[in-house]
Length: 110
Image (cartoon, rainbow, N blue to C red; front, side, top):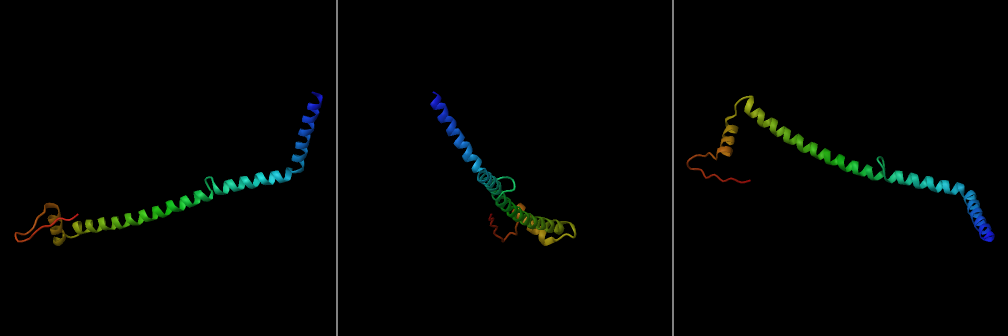
């Protein structure tokens, strides 16, 4: 039993000596892994950066489409409010009520 305890004590001591000798290397390895992990992952990591760039591009495209749609709605509103545009009113009647002249054929396409 005493031999086993001496053997375990010597094994532990060797392990402690090796760790004391390699302490600087271990600290550097752990710091490197920590920095690498935070660089790639996390709120401000590289993966998150690319996801945010992709989201930004999608929002810019959505902004462009909404701007075009808003301009179209404003143009239609202007045609109805500023001065009455009879041609535009005729287009609206034809579209909404399927109204046409007696010799016209009406085709509806979606």
